[in-house]
Image (tube, rainbow, N blue to C red; front, side):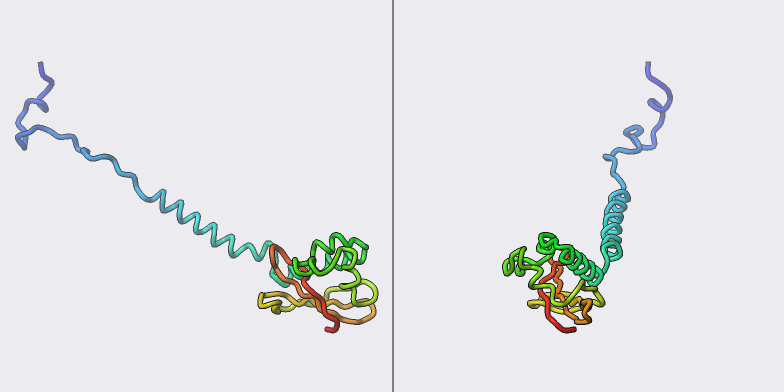
Length: 155
């Protein structure tokens, strides 16, 4: 015996009742758009916040020169040597770092930093005042972190 009037009864069309949803279900693209949007937002935030976390190029250069000078002042030539750029490391041995970079009497103190160029690449010039009042300029390049890449006497 058959079911009820829906299976037997008069139909609007000759075939009988069809299921309302016959196609394969489709997903909404909202989740995918939200994931991509969140990824783009995270990338933009990292690009904006990175200088705030790490500091500007001038701040990083000042700090690198301060650490370099402190290492030389304490006789830690190995640490100072590691803070040199590759070109300078090739030109000087760890034992000769102090002789090449201590250009004034007494401990040096960082007083300023400014934008510059070194071998066509962006760099920082960090001014150092020595205990005897003399000045020198340390060139700092940012190649995998700030590295000292030269010194000149005078301010």
